[in-house]
Amino acid sequence: MRHKKLENTTSPYFIGVDLGGTSITIGILDINGVSITKKKISTFGEKGPDAAMTRIAETIDSLIEQNDIPRSLIKRVGLATPGTMDIEAGMMIAPSNLPSWQNYPVRDSLKVKCRFPVTYAHDAAAAAYGEFWQGAGKGEPGLVVMTLGTGIGCGIILKGNVWSGVHCHGGECGHILIDVSNNARWCNCGQTGHLEAYASATGLIKRTLDFVMAGLDTSLCERVHSVEQKAEIPKILHEEADAGDELAQKIIDETAFYISSGLVSLVHTIDPSCILIGGAMTFGGEKSKIGERFIEHIRQGFKSRTFKVLAERIRIDYAKLGPDAGYIGAAGLAINDWKAEGGENKQDD
Ligand SMILES: [Zn+2]
Image 1: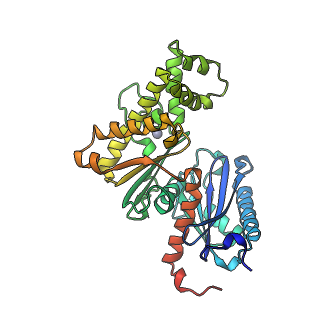
Image 2 (image 1 turned 135 degrees about the vertical axis):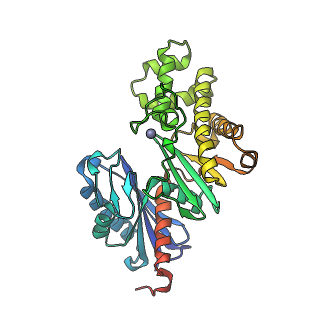
Image 3 (image 1 turned 90 degrees about the horizontal axis):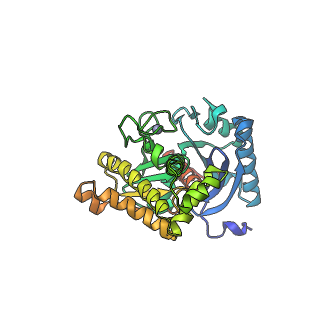
């Protein structure tokens, strides 16, 4: 008898792995994208990549076992990691959140340990593919998914295919230049004037601290002064903006303006049909008043500075899948590779 969780699913099955600096999400999906199970484990980056690959493989084995899935019905694993990377070679080159993982052959290492073929992708591209396949960007012929967090990630899906660029840097939209002045802000990447320096959580925190240091007398400044963990500032901004603090609202509006500035450059280069905004730094997203204000300001800032036809036709919305987008998209990309290799025509073992 099949396991209950496999009812209403269609074999074969695929595994998605979204590897981040602090956690790894691993899930099993059927060929239509129905999620069967998922598990989040810690990355423990300091223990090195080999140890992490072993733990991923063990988690995959235990998920397969718990759900009574015959191993022969699992066809492929999709693995998404942060850049920089060489996708063709299956190598992590210099991931900024995992400093000791440089030049690591992540694809082949996981393949050996889990004994399945592995498709390798950039995490932002996988998240974008997840939204294209199962989320808010279903069927969009040109989709950009911008993820706002500590940094700014970006995935581009054109006619159903990930656009990674010739050197696997095709989605680095966080580093679009939005300020060419001499006093432009420093970006996490070591250059100045990039979008990420203004509109990521890191940039938002720095801009907020500048206002607070200027000695303004608002409830936002009072709270930011006393907070120990600066990482909590985006959450404080959200709460204060909700409560009507005008400075908090102004900082969030400015963030939206910077993002729309980046989108104007991006859209005039690739001309997509849809842009989705996701990530942890969306001020509650469409479920909150401030989140709605944030995306509306992005839309207006974009519309006021782009060509009329693009302003009228390009949809800007929030992404839908949240942190699940990465593993779902990674599994979807694995399915594409399996199909491209003629998997559907081969008989099941
Ligand atoms: Zn940069």
